[in-house]
Image 1 (cartoon, rainbow, N blue to C red):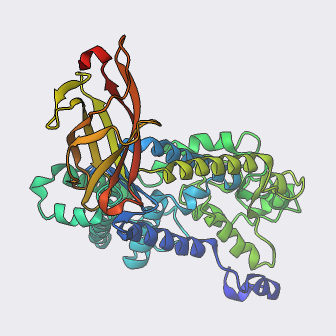
Image 2: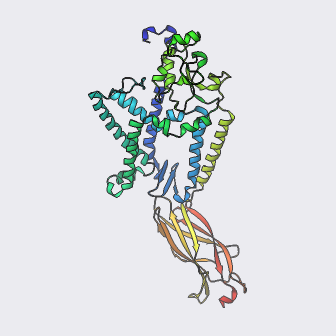
Image 3: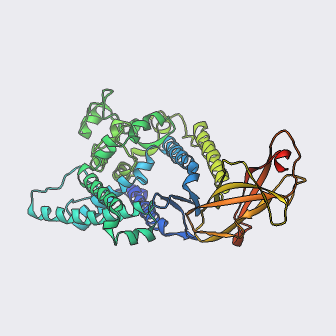
Length: 480
């Protein structure tokens, strides 16, 4: 239908209309830009998100956690999956059409490289027609397309690895590939998969491989928003057995004179997963809304609204009123997400900037005479201390004794603060002593609860941890 056949009402209807496809392109650009930039953004050396198996660290919201604090990961996964499920209940497979890397990569290869840059495909709106690779010109262009995508796949693979290997380390590692075979192997493996997936597997990944399409039907309800053909206006193209009944408009009109579908099949030829939206809900639909654009353009030229809408079955098929977006199921997902996020924030806020384990040695105590001739009771411990910050710190500790014993249990060893480098587990032998009579019990040894207050000398207000331990004092006859 050419511009000259567009009715005045159609011109008015289409004026100012922006296809969903263009909006998706802009959104893809924002998502891609964020994915590329995010790994490089740091605050005090901490990343927005980084799961470093190399340094055994988790960076989350610019806070660094040690691997011993990976109890936060289940909460992140819960937020991810609950969020995707909630989005699916609300907007169908909108994640697939608007945010999934598979879809973005296919658009880059098919629409940008094959169609716009090299002209292998004639039109973006016709995704059903396969390029003719029997032509020598197209064979050469296909090789160029594969090379261009392979180069982009290396960038995509590197970007993915930046969330597991900090970019600053990544750049240093790839300069010495022989020393980092796992990293190089991962990159090559990802690139090989992306080349096979995007160029050869194509949308079959969405249809046959991705498990998401299998669970979407369980999550949908009558208010779920998706791309829907309106048979009440357009007419039934398929029967109840999903068999196609009409291919020409005149045949459709002979059965249903009020049917508005022109049977142009623009909504079919534009579909990247090769389905006919007029057939009803199908697992292959990724909610890219290309069919909505196609029908909007065709029907808009006739001055009519699109027969394919981004709407719900309740509103479009059953005509039972407006779509309820904030229904109990959606509010339930939002509530769970808020609760999990609050728990994650609370647990993340209790992060310790120093990890400390205290193990008491097997020998309960030792009794000696000190230089002043007093009887001295020693207790030995092994401190395992780890600095979880990015810079060196000097550490020491205080002993907090029960009431009435304040200042009577002292530190014999170490005598001064000691330095610990970032990420290093420091083993330190600690000896506490007392030369005073803490307890007089002739029957048994006395176990005295104490608190060890460990801290960074140069960051005492920030880096402080408290650990409970014991000091064993011998029975009275052992001191004679």
